[in-house]
Image 1 (tube, rainbow, N blue to C red):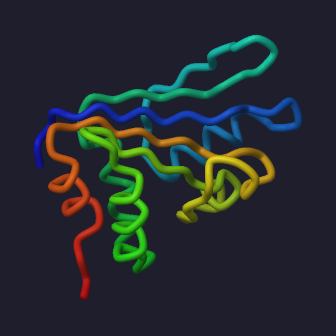
Image 2 (image 1 turned 30 degrees about the vertical axis):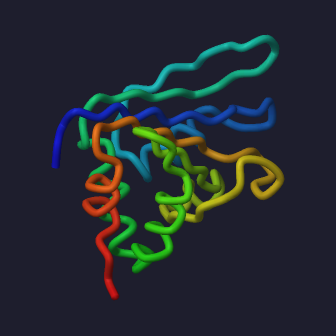
Image 3 (image 1 turned 90 degrees about the horizontal axis):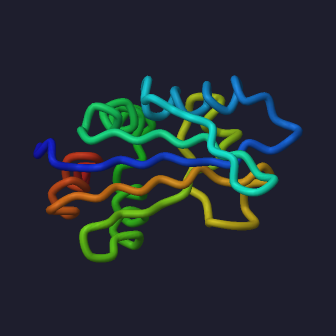
Length: 134
């Protein structure tokens, strides 16, 4: 798999949330990316960036362990525009160490985790992340 990618993982940290628990949720899906808190007006976001597939390896293993590669492929292809793949994950489910895709708004009470992957060949990356099982 080509190493020429950029992974951006971001979620809002609500005033009612413990930032350490939000960080735990992200780490359970993407391993130990380097995250930082960004203030935007009166809102706080936890954002992680990486320029390799290592952050996606944990995510890939979870997709395979949970037997959701085919469903993930549909979501990933649907979220592909040009060289960018964008999708959303449920933050509470992530805290439990599982993957649940969600909509950008309204589906996850605490707000979703937004994942953006920029790469030269999105189809090849999706084939690596979520191999076709049927």
